[in-house]
Image 1 (spheres, rainbow, N blue to C red):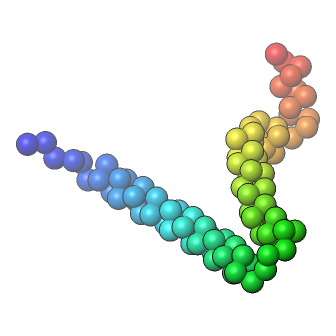
Image 2 (cartoon, helix red, strand yellow; image 1 turned 90 degrees about the vertical axis):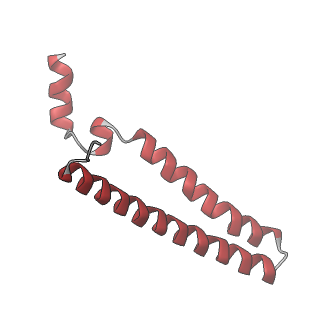
Length: 91
């Protein structure tokens, strides 16, 4: 029977803990957004207020997802403008 090496086991446990923490935070934020939307929906039928209550969190998610997928190289601040120019010159 094969045993898992201790460093690998510790790494897997650490990754599992980080995953649980991240998911817990995500669920808490989603729950708070849903609670706020429910409260607004229960209190008013004004289309503008409902549009803001549902549209603003959706817009924020789109902006954050777009930012997360396009942060590479000098756009992410990893390269200064000078080093980016030097990198292009040497190519």
